[in-house]
Amino acid sequence: MRSLLSLATSIAVGAGIAVAAPIPASADTPEPDNVCIPSVPETDPLEPGPVDICVSVFKPASASKDNRAPVLLHSHGWGGSRTSMPGSFQRYLDAGFGVVSIDQRGFGESGGKAHVEDPAFEGQDVINVIDYVAGLDWVKQNGRNDPVLGALGGSYGGGYQFVGAFTELMETGRTRFDALAPQITWYSLNESLAPNEVVRSTWVSGLYAVGLDAHTSTVHAGFAEGIATGDWPASQDEFFRNNGPAFHVEAGRKLDIPVLLRQGISDNLFPLDQAIKNFDRALTDRARRKSLLIGYNGGHALPNVLPLGSAVSGDACSEKLAGGYDDLELRFYQENLQGAPRELAGHGRYHLMTSGGDCLSVDAVDATVEFELPDITTTTTAGVPQAIKIADGPLTIAGTPHLDALVTALGLDSRAFFALSVGTSPADAQVIQNNVLPHREESINLGTRRNIELPSVAATVGEGESLFLTVSPTSDMFALHGSRTPGGLRLADVTAKLPVVP
Picture 1 (cartoon, rainbow, N blue to C red):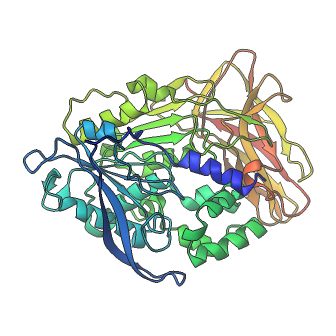
Picture 2: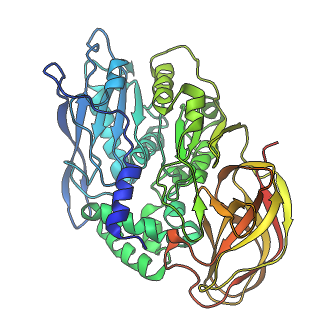
Picture 3: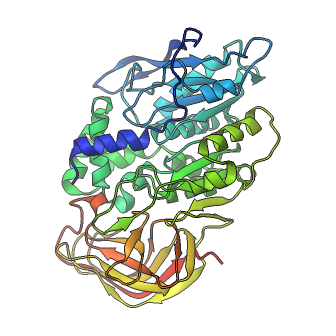
């Protein structure tokens, strides 16, 4: 496993998305107003008591009581803190937006412990910040106590956007956010941190180290159990269950506002499937027609060595739509908060950058074409990855593939890791965009039909190349958490279902 120090550095770089480069402060660069807002008390025994949420308020020079401005909330990635340097967010200020940057609970100058975007804690924090913003006399209003409002930030800075909007929806039937722009964030934390209840140990270890002082007592206890066993403890499942759009969707709630979703396809913490689920399930049909999903190669993107993976960097789809993501995000908010002419194209579609660097814009990402595969027997923890040919190129895929198979397991808690890969032969095939997903059979199984989800990808398989199914007994992202007892899985009557682009 990578050292925690090295991984912590990667998290800080990958999760702390910069939304605007600060400009050098000068004598006429105004300082932001720094304010701390009372919020719900902390209940965790490690730090009980009153909690203030501290923010930095950036007012655009053009704003006044007579010329009111919309506001964009901003917050940091996991382990970070708010942006308070004079000259930050200048592109938004120059465009007439105010920005309020937030220290989330447990970080920066804010008190309490991080409940990781729990509606009862961080959800209330966001609501209290919105109430404060609504009282500023230069902020544009939709109505009483209802500011014209958007949001910025990625990873944990995307999670606060969803928890704020959904908590308001849960409590009042509507949200005061008029639009959102969450980047590289999650649909379900349980799915992301422990898909199929197998701990994504490399990332979980790094995240734990980065947020060490902010954790609740429940997370401290659950981390120790999860890393030791490779199982996702029941305490963690309960702790994270409400902390994402999945919880609200299961309760019948959907957002009815435009959302600009940007997700790293080579992100192996919050993979592309999390954004697809947010786009497909967390938005109303009307909202989706006004929204965009951008998949780029980046995010929380660690390289895979076992099994060997590959990915290029870049954001070809943002460049195609608006010349780059910064311009796309700014234009999205100008159109949705300032009434600018509707010039952005591609609403309601999935815009996905391929592993080769192209942009595919598609209307659907479901698996549509089936390929029959030979029977597969996975190797034990001492074995090497296998590559089973699915089809020869040319072939283009974009979306979420699946395997359908009759699975047999003769050992207890048998596990294997599945991915799609591309190469000229099994010997040189590399996992597309560095993503694998585990399949787990907890007990002896003499043959049960299973649907195995594979990582969501976008790829063009060229002439002379082939698409393969890679099956590995181990994975870098799930270090030390392969099968718990010797033995493998046998897959019979196997069908690969792929999202083939015509």
